[in-house]
Image 1: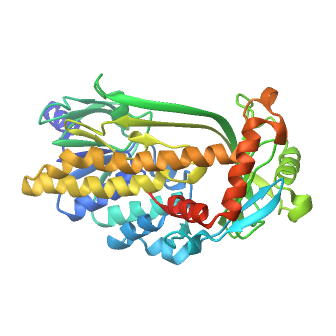
Image 2: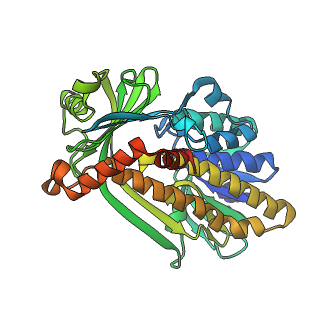
Image 3: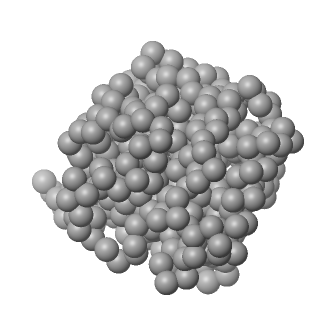
Length: 405
């Protein structure tokens, strides 16, 4: 390769450079490509990793409507399941909420996020969309100008430079987009003080509902994924390794917290995956910094108690795609000017409900302060659950916010 050819290979461009190939980046890339906008996706991981990394699988009604609107929902309608019931297990017994018949009547579609990502990626490639795997974005430069550029490390280790008119940061909380924010960007951060041990079990679901067990020893959760795989969560002592307990001990603890002796045994099986999740949240404000715009986990991170992350990502991607298309195809920048405020309204609503759910479900994370039903926090939690059990107004509020974004 000649020196001039090598130079061309390391200097490339697109009207929009999208960092990250998760739900936000892929939906954005698809919609931009469909609108005739020149774009490229840069993803630091391999295609195999992108298509197989397990994440949440609850898609809200508005998310399904967006995917329907753009012809991106065949897989979830074919292989996903509709879900509209959750069950709370407490010291006062158990109760169910048919949230699909409450509030505005919205249900979730259960469809593993890795399946959705695989669908979106296949669709994007079928359109002829450009994507570069194993390409690590290092930094975004000159975002306050009209020709920002992204420095990257190519798959073979060489440096490269991608010039753009706009850069969409969809590369998560630790990505180059966040690292490149100007000093004036505000980061609102909150640590709920709660940690989960997330488990993926090779076992059929043990109940036909999302299960939330509120116990003085800590929260336990049950979420069906497929007929043969179930996700469980255990409130966990922060700093304890994921492998600290044997499978037997984990299943025994799930039995205790989910009150299996009272409500029926859990289907046990091999644990396929373990992971530690600290329930923290943060929001970047604003989401636009000149020619750099944030979406998905780069824009905000939510604790997983209410499964809002992927749903916000898809919503933000659709809003951003429309704004970028207006700016590039028609010279109308009103959508970009209002992008941050419009998305932040949804983000803060989701953060508020996620915080409420987190407080509802969890015992005090400090064992030294726990006093069971006699403690102040536990008594408040018990009162909230009693209201949720008996008040139709409270139930309608819960249902609307549970499925809303």
